[in-house]
Image (cartoon, rainbow, N blue to C red):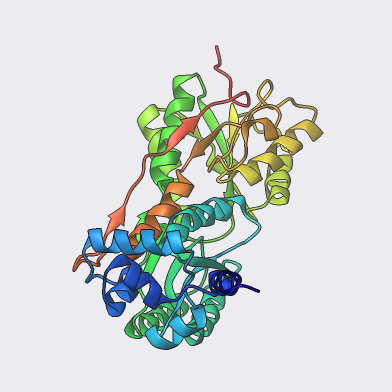
Length: 354
């Protein structure tokens, strides 16, 4: 074996060794501490051009931080813990997808923690997360619980913040944290306005039985839109059921069986609206012809449902991305709110009426 062969083997072996932060710092022309701060999304004390140069160098060299070492040295793991009320709900899937899109370029992972809509479950999860030390925490979804439970949740979150963990909400504007606000009320109001414009004059509501801010915001938007457009909401037929496909089916089945006459049935989620469509078919009616149906949140592809379901795009992925952006930018003395414009999508389940 020649000297060149030995050198080649050594080079090959070195190329297979993990790249260290010290190597990244040397290649980027900065101090080791500066490189560490530049790769820490929470650090506010690095010039943007330096941060960009270090990150580009780390990417070129294939550097990957040691999560265990980072947790030991910084007191937190490079993760954003997202609390969702129901991991089966496509609404939450959209929010989390947006959060992942924003977190990955910053070198962060997203973990998902289910809470089943109950504040006491959230308290338990937050307490557990405090021991695991995620870098940040994101609250989403809807929740139920009395004032004592709500106060206990806020106290537990404040303990996490006291330990240095930032918190953001992606959803309804109900907590004293930076919030990326889902435009629920504005979206419901805009939906009624558009339906009235194309000839719909009376509506029945399939409402959630979860007494949450989300439920109140949707209903408030519907009422505001009806008042502005001069159309009728049939509150007698409003039924509160679980926010599921089966819930939508049960409520609509009863409405149709009792013979209530309305132009359209509205649901606070697309999943519930699919149940409404099934109930209409079971009653011998064709959605979009004999009865209008509209959902809310626009979480399904247009070709997933026949006929196409009218809904409201709440910009959920943008909300998730914006929530992470709030976590990664320097905090301000005042609470920040990121807002978004909803988009009404009228499809075949609510064609224009004569």
